[in-house]
Structure formats: C-alpha cells, structure tokens
Amino acid sequence: MDPAETADSAVLLVLTDAYPALLSEEEVRRESRHAKIDVEDALARLTAAGLIHRLNGFVFASRTAAHAGRLDYT
Image 1 (cartoon, rainbow, N blue to C red):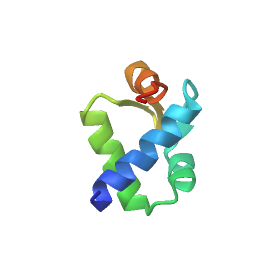
Image 2 (image 1 turned 135 degrees about the vertical axis):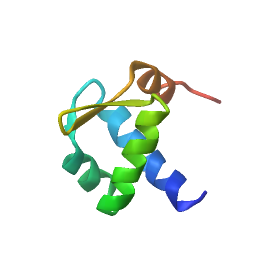
Image 3 (image 1 turned 90 degrees about the vertical axis):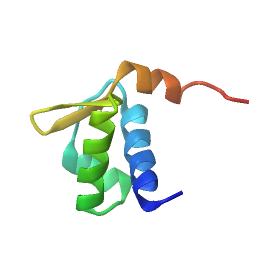
Image 4 (image 1 turned 30 degrees about the vertical axis):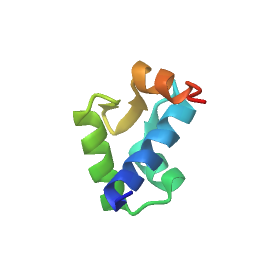
C-alpha cells in the first residue's frame, strides 16, 4: 500500500468509527497519527470520492462509507 492509501485508510477509519459525529480536521489528524499535509491530502481525496463530507472545518463520513466500514467480508 502506498503512503497516500495508508493515510486515506487511516482517516476514513477514524471517521467511520466516529460516525455520525462531526470531527474537526485537527482531531482527525491527531487520531490518524499522520502528518498534517498527509491528512489534508487524504481529506481532499476522500471528499472528491464522495466518502466524506466537509463542513466549516469539520468532517464526517458519508452514510455509505460508514455502512461499508461495518460490513463483514468473511
């Protein structure tokens, strides 16, 4: 997995675990334990993909992303 995918996965996991809560972008950075620029880039990619929503400095997982994160693929 490349570094961008690692950051995307970490950020999405933080947000789906917190769903339906809104988290500040700084909270996401702290929880994901990635560099600020990596989290900012991940947030941009995930927003473009429709997996998260941004609102005045806060972010939250889309309903679809949260549901997919809870599926058991075994």
